[in-house]
Amino acid sequence: MEHLLPALPYDYAALEPHIDARTMELHHGKHHAGYVANLNAALASLPELRERPAIWLLRNLAQVPEAARASVRNNAGGHVNHAMYWRAMSPAGGGAPGGPLAEALRRDFGSVEKFKTAFDAAGAGLFGSGWVWLAHTRRAGARLVVLTTPGHDNPLQQDMSPILVNDLWEHAYYLKHQNRRPAYLEGWWQVANWREAERRFAAADAAAAQVPEDSEATLRAA
Ligand code: MN
Image (tube, rainbow, N blue to C red; front, side):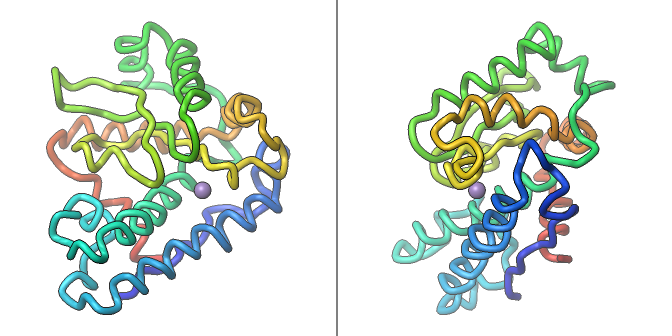
């Protein structure tokens, strides 16, 4: 099995003006494509791992030979995280969450606005490159948490289910915002895909102990 770059679920320009088309073109066509190519290269000499889904590799890094482990971690993570990120945005995005997700955000953060403030503060506060997440954890009772991960790590590696994600690498915003990460984070809510977050939350809440394999099916089908 070769890992494949999933098609974007919308055009490069579809998230304008909040995310510019040139950034999307480079981000998807060069950065994400590069992680996919490098993941395939890292697995070329590891036939026993070539049939494993990228999410499985991320969750089972101890089973990757040490010489390839850092490359598999970085590039499987880059592949999985970007596939989640494209779907965390939508031209029909923005607005507000509804249903059980909105209720859980109020329960765990006080309000949806307080959650967004916490998410943006965590994202602005991460030093260097990484990701900011809303994730569902089973620890200390099922609840929602905000966390950041360095590099291309994913909450799945901490046995949490990702619900919503934003990319904090400069390549995600530098052409439009240069060093102003908080401006990117603030504008991003206009394209945030709450329907995808609601779907992910429902899956995480319904099958608390299971990995959301649906996202992997998307990666492999593309
Ligand atoms: Mn990125």
